[in-house]
Image (cartoon, rainbow, N blue to C red):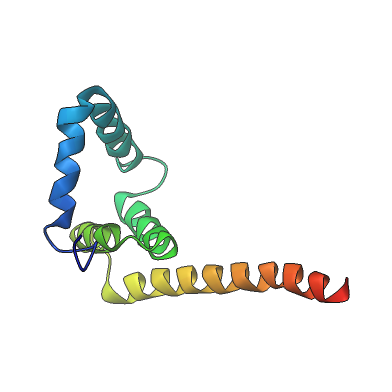
Length: 108
């Protein structure tokens, strides 16, 4: 087993999914392409949302990829940092909301 699951070249292992289930992978890539195409939201805004989501889901490949794509779409460093802070607030808020479970358990 590798010492680190998230190596720079680790994402290349996902290519095996193409050979195992090409029709499903093609569907995913088509869907992903449509989601990130210009629409009611700009590509830049979609990438900023993706950066925030990637921090919440904690996917290092998505963090890197969407940060690069956001820069290419015209996002500033400040906009990217602000998107990350939105994710930080959302994670903290989720932890606070879940504290109700522990506090309720203490009352039992």
